[in-house]
Amino acid sequence: PVFVLNGPNLNLLGTREPEIYGTTTLADIEALCRQTADTLGVSIVFEQTNHEGALVELIHQAGEKGSAIVINPAAYTHTSIALLDAIKGVDVPAIEVHLSQPVAREAFRAVSYVSLAAAGTISGLGARGYELGIRAAVQLAQARAK
Ligand code: CA2
Image (cartoon, rainbow, N blue to C red; front, side):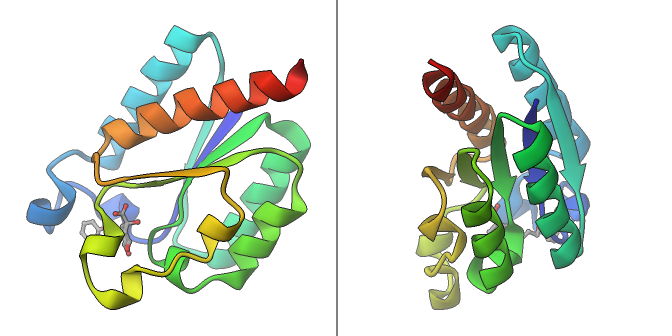
């Protein structure tokens, strides 16, 4: 499976700050991801957690049981060397996804530790970024398997 991982506060999507994050809920995004995976003939594991260590463990699981990672690390993007090291430590490609365009926002969002290990980043396209992220992740995983 492709592991689609979501970081802190993304469970609140669709309830607040619609001007930044839209009205789409995380359940809507999960449905879009499952639809995309079905179209591509792959399975997904879809998880959200507010805990940094839990994300580290999910990345490890993806390294053991998954073919690729699509991750929106949310605020941990800008702070977490632990997530960076976890992605570096597993042998599967990771695509970083953001709903908003972090570099166009506050200065502290311009830095991404996760980008140092990600194969690519999709930002600013809302929920559609997840679909594009899954497509990119599957292509990278298939290219590796050849
Ligand atoms: O644009 C993104 O996807 C972010 O990863 C979202 C994070 C933010 O810290 C990153 O800089 C960019 C925040 C996710 C929290 O989402 C909320 C949604 C509704 C209400 C409150 C928070």
